[in-house]
Length: 207
Image (cartoon, rainbow, N blue to C red):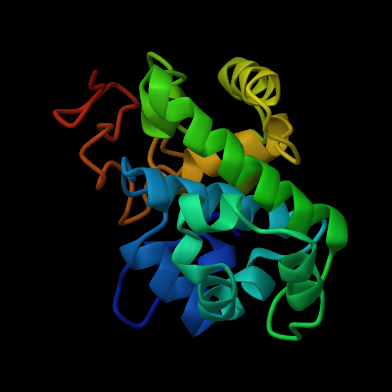
């Protein structure tokens, strides 16, 4: 089944049609443009923690992550040392994976370093493609793109880790850089960045 029409008569993909938490996330946040540094750092961090896990698992722990990482303030997280890593490893409210925790600290430092060259938002959004996919079924939704491969490569060059092409593409979907809502979904084209046909909308690229 490609789209499921709910009791509210709105069409959603299967992953967003049954779990109330995922449905709320899909209806109100996923795919909407995020252009601020802290917002992008948070989503980049959560996508890295999601690697190998379900997004529902991360979403249920999101508020715990925000508390543990002090609102994903890059300046604060960049200053974390061994004691902070140990604190986070002892926090049952988050994903206690040392490699991912340490990567988040490194990525915070890399985010701060980018400010001298325009900042994380400018870098991330520079990989917006000319057109977005127009999938009609979940099987047609890509998991990578030439832009996500290039983004992952550039982020790694800038000192980021745990950001491969698949994670980069998931980030692009989450923050509106691409629109992979299925054709026919009530969210297709709702971000303002993209039109339903896959062309750029009025809220397109910015300097």
